[in-house]
Image 1 (cartoon, rainbow, N blue to C red):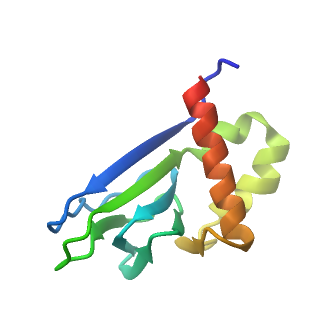
Image 2 (image 1 turned 180 degrees about the vertical axis):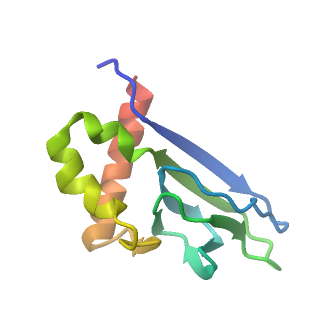
Length: 137
């Protein structure tokens, strides 16, 4: 199968020293899987800890940034999938049923799951399938 997936997959490793990314926002959803270690994530001014096995979904147009846990010698790794929901406008049924509810102004700023059960496992499985498709392109 040869097609372009409308997404970006990034693997990032933060070293043992404190690392921080600049606060930013974009017109895309961001799915973060913590592969190793712990990160502090701040979304619209609310800070929370995400640890190995956690998945965090950040809604589009939300100011956010991530930094590794300070005062630790642990290596931290995360995998991020970024996709723009506007791509799905082409299929009006999918867009209206699944995307529009997420785009409502106060739908959510972020959602956090653990990947071993329930919807967290479903999201994790979907992320793995997207990675496989991206590699096959």
